[in-house]
Length: 444
Image (tube, rainbow, N blue to C red; front, side, top):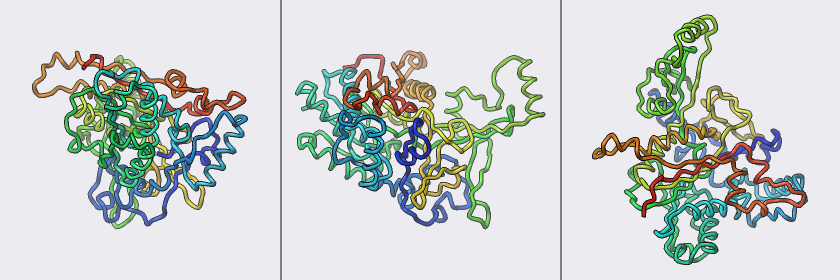
């Protein structure tokens, strides 16, 4: 994820969060995406980001920043001084971007730890999973906070498991958390894909799952309709015969993940929206006179991950943070991604995701309303031995908060405030939110 905060003008967004890319030849000519066989958009995106050899994140570990020391916000005069300080840090480290948990360490992670401690049932051993733990800064910050603020027995009996797909980042996490010797016995990294159910067992005890800036890089699917009333079609990616260019191919809806996501969104497959007969006639006439193609991006990767997590961790509580919207998006469609690359020291955005052949980050805004509905949907999935009546009875308590509201409630915002009152943690990340989800039943 190459983050971009909406308060920044274009020049500042490039300073903050421009992705770093190691140049290499375009991928996919020896992979499935480059073959003659078409693939769903989500498979193309997964390869573009995660291909072990040519994917964007195979080059990512060197661009994830780790600060040598925490920023002393209280010693900075204000916003200009903070921006100058950031500029100096980026130039000294030659790093592309720093995550919020890194920029505001340890306070960002401490806010997350406090939210967990207020909600967790501390009468049972505390177990935390983190998906995509980056450099390990969140893990160390959470464990530091629990060691200092929770009863001794809570820290002594806790466990923290990081599920990380990148082997280089997994190693970095072990080094970061290992900075506190007592953490090592309670922390481990499992280098695997969290969305692959084969890597999970069945955890019947209550636990927490943390996902920071994970949802934005999960594969998405795309559906297309020729006009306002035409049926929705799946979008596939194929290589044009005897040419290297990629193009879209439209097929009838068939994929179960896509149809399930559309069901949650309440999107009729025939393309018609529910309404009065008069409105339907008017829409059909408008579609014939002024046809307007429709494109809709579906977070099928998120849906798959939630299905896996709820299946493996049925009593989990979830805390996720991500972007609610993104500025300057050129790719068309509802919930469309920002596709950004960096060449010759300059950041630029693509007009189409098809140009991202492993040399660009592809990250999406999170529709938190849809995230909540998918969370409820996945938590109510029937097991073979369950009755239909149980499907409606099992629910979750959920809340979505702006980052500023979350940190004011659970964090210590005074620690990230400059002398003149400016607070980048509260003032700058207006396009980010936190999502908390816990079971309604108290299970010991």
